[in-house]
Length: 234
Ligand SMILES: NC(=O)CC[C@H](N)C(=O)O
Image (tube, rainbow, N blue to C red; front, side, top):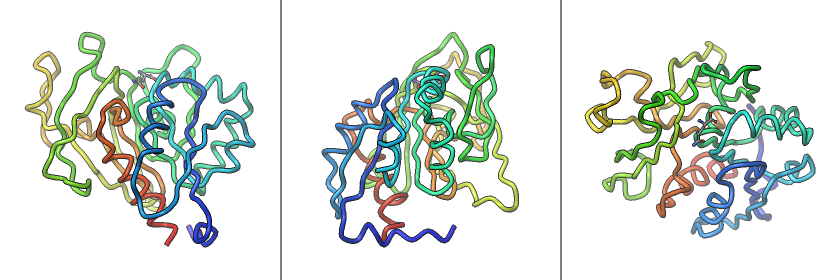
């Protein structure tokens, strides 16, 4: 994409957290306490001016329809779409829905998206009986990757299909749910079913269908900052 991040060299890297609704405070606390090799600061984003100060953005979990509606009311929807074209964004749960290109199971009236990642995702994709569960995830590339990460899935979305066009950056799967760890009430899945994908990267962006900010484990935050933000600043 021809981006240069030279301006990072002598300055703080500002990680924005969209703070319209949902679990933004938890993300803020985790980022603030990260120990990484560059100075980073965290900024809550509620206005276009807030967004303009950010080098990267986290969109939290919450309610994707509400977040999109509040973003529209704040005049942030188009600026967010422009941001996604040039800067790293991580969407968690509802944020993952907003980052996707196509959403199924939307509320009446549809769902506005930012469209940074070429997938089709289903809202509340694990169905209504089991709305929340936890599962251990083995994730290559995380610090201390031998230790499983506790994935907290709260009315989580499910990846249905990967739809990159030849011109799009490739999609890299970062974590899958082991089908044998799914609650027995959920339908059984083959190991390679896209529904088992719970963390992925494409180009600048990162998506997790679960909530790393609700654990006391900062490894996904560190991963995003290290791999998606700072790696591009060097
Ligand atoms: N925990 C979450 O972020 C849930 C997402 C929610 N089901 C939505 O559609 O937006």
